[in-house]
Image (cartoon, rainbow, N blue to C red):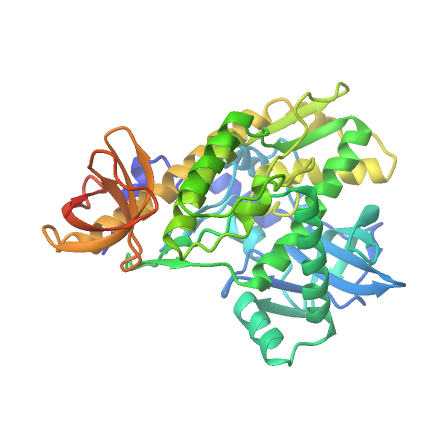
Length: 453
């Protein structure tokens, strides 16, 4: 069996919740006093198969020639008193961590997978965003209020996609596709970037595969992105909050990527933004796969930016091509609870709570630590699985595509098994399929190395 426990220990992944945190979570039973009753609306959730930590539920409808999105987000703050044991532990953890065998949650399961989760056929406390869109899918009005909801359906991406593909989808899923496509068009107009690179996924037995996002996932993500943009606009207008930012790539870096793309046979017409080109690439083709790998260099430097009074110099998330905030996953990410509370106060024309304002200056550093830990765990899991997949094939010849070059070698990508590894070669041919010889696949070092055959 893979050494997932050893990885967690090595990388400092938090262990079980302390008894006082579990006890405080068990005692958290807030009353729904004073909030709107929206239990008659047909909310539904769409998540990966088997998910129980459900942050979001949606109810979509037409409104004149446009649309109305009611997007319910779990009201985690109702269950987590500021400064209490659950809150302090959440600040220590920062975000939920995922491994193939289990997840390490941000909040105790009695909250994240039960009382605070938007499970179906249960009265649940939520912050409900009311997002009005015109016929082109552009946002025209935003409001968010506390409410009680009752989700009617728990759906998964594969099932939603199947219904849309075979023509059996009900109106609410047809609206998801309709709105999602409009929002994708809006993203292209803004110059947003969507890297279509398949993700490497590892199962509990250590098998690694490439998986491309389903269209239903992308349309669902557009609702979340829209909400994050709406939250950022509210906070900038109120001059207080927490943005997720990404600097605009340097002009010389974009020019370098364009030269590489053209050299690899990837069309890049004049006056076409790099976002348009990258988002349209086919990751299954050798040249585009290399361009996508190189493009990730343009998307580095994401951070959380807090402000209170004076607006930050850096407001943009360049991949979204707009100001943006994380606010739709408070069960799984600490920052979202604070953004949600800020937006609730601003929409109610009330002061932002003191406990929120006090935390804003320290949240960027806390989230940076949590993100670094999550990325390290994700990378270590894939590295271990890749080495395990090839450990008995050292010396064999394989075929792969050179997707990155650098000093002393580069990176090659195999299609089967779904592995990326270090290529030790002088000036390897970027974007070309090459014959390889596997020289190392060491699960202990989590290292895979190739040379040209």
